Structure formats: C-alpha cells, structure tokens
Image 1 (cartoon, helix red, strand yellow):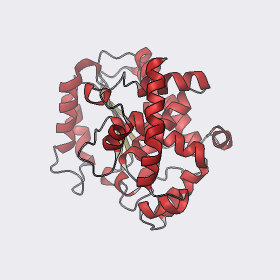
Image 2: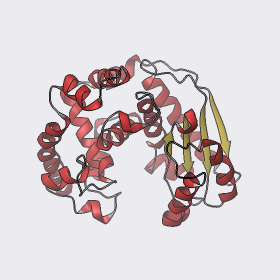
Image 3: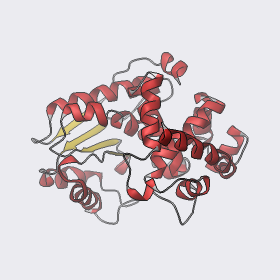
Image 4: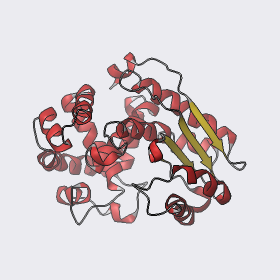
Length: 288
C-alpha cells in the first residue's frame, strides 16, 4: 500500500460544502486534510467525475439536516423521504453531543459524505481519535463506483467494504508502523466498540460475527475484524490485486466469482482460513 501511495498524484476534487452554523470550522480543516490524502491515494485508480457533497452539522441543527438530506432521497434505498433524517436523529439520540457517525453514499446518483458530529467534539478530538473518517468515507465512494447502481452491496461482503475503508483510513492517517499497529490492536481489543463485540473472542465467534448470512453477524465487528482481515488479504496478494478485483466486478463479474478468480480461494474459505489468525491477533493485542 505504501508503494501504491507513492504513485498517487495530488488532484483537485470538485466539492460542495454545506455546513451548519454550529459546526466547528476548525474541524472542517481536519476533514479537508483527510479528503486531500484520500483523493491523492486513489488518484491513479479513480477520480471523481461528479461534484462531491460534504454535509456537516451537529445535533443542534435538526432543521438543517431535514432540509439538506431531502435532495438525497433515493426511492431505491429509502423507505420514505424522512428515512435518512430519521436514522440521523436516532444516531444523535444514541450518542448525543459526542456523536461521530459519518457516512458516504451515491444516493440520487450524487456522491456525498455526511458528517454528523456532536457539538462537544473539537478539532483536537477529531484529529486524535477520528482522524481516519474522511479517507474511510472517500473509500466508500470509490467502492460505490464499482457496481452499476452506485452502492456497496454489489462489491463484496460488509467485512470487505468496511474493513477496506477502515484499513485505508488508518493507513493514510497513522503512517508509521508503530502508530498503525497501536490503533489496529486497540480496535481488535474492541476498546471503541460495544459490549456485544467485546465478547467476540474465538475464531468461530469471529466467523459468525462477520460471515455472510450468519445469524450471529454483528455490525461493528466488520470494522475491527474486517480491517484485520483486509490487512491480511493485502499482505498476501498486494493492494493491486484489490484493484483487479474491483475491475472484474465493474466489468460485470459477480463478486463471489471475482473474489475466487482474483485471490484463488472462495470468500467463504478465505474467511474460514483467516479467522484463526484474527483470534491470535486479538489475543496478542489483549495481552500487550
């Protein structure tokens, strides 16, 4: 990934900033630094042909959110016009003034990144704890272009989409090996996840938490264990292989077939092979 990053070129990304009056302007600078890093990293593979919307607000700005999210209504993915807004309000109710629940999508065929940040978060908080958010969400925009309907469902399993976004975000913002490993290990110890994820310990539990169609799937596990699984996939095959996988999907190959053609193993067998390794990684992280 470091070799791939060195080939990237800084590009001018066309973007539209929609910012509420209560959003911290210094935090916007952190977000824009992340946008520049992500656009440079992905520049040789994908350059946005459309203007990217960046919508930024806090829990104090519910009328703002209701107004600005309405144009992104997409009948293919939303139950109603208020669907996006209702989900946002639910997030604010859950996390309050320290909300950090950014998202990215191609709703209404518009590439957008939404940053609902709690008003108690400062630019320092974002820099130190949530620095990977913008490259993470930008990676979702790249992934979204790999399916014909501009969504993540056609490019692989959730552990792949969230795991890769987390890996790229972490890689671009914690660039030394010690920094990277420290945060990766914190993720595997589940310091930043809910209690349901902290009980995911054994290889079988990890497989059930992130496996396809399993009744035991746990959403947050796709970030921590998915990141480590994607790290292993890149270590085995190289970042360029991930790009070839994307290209196969874009050409019309169904993603499970594209996975096997690219990596020489089914996505199910890869997950079965990698979860014992993830169990050991987590155990070592807990002991450290």
